[in-house]
Image (cartoon, one colour):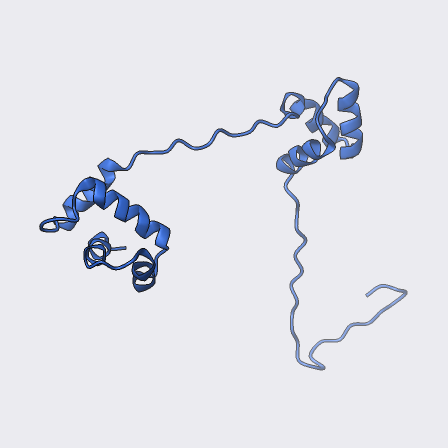
Length: 144
């Protein structure tokens, strides 16, 4: 995306919607650049070279820290849950056993926690197309 082109169209009086349509970018992005340009004072006078614009953009944009990550209410029981799942204990039984130990979380919390530990395995079937008569199968005693 060319910052100079966005600024050129802003200076020409185009709306955010028109600039977004002309450059195939979101109008919220155009709005962000418009606000930055007004604050940086690059809408008046001669347009600086692209290198200077990019440097100004990089120094003016502050890093927003990532949002804090939620910690599961089941996390303190990770080792127990892992051991139970290794022996084949179902999630409903794990929830019941945790409640016996004072766990106040929901079954959904246990289910999300276990799914995070054990992502679902997807069975993939590949269909192989054959021309009629190219391959044959026989069923013997109920088996292919």
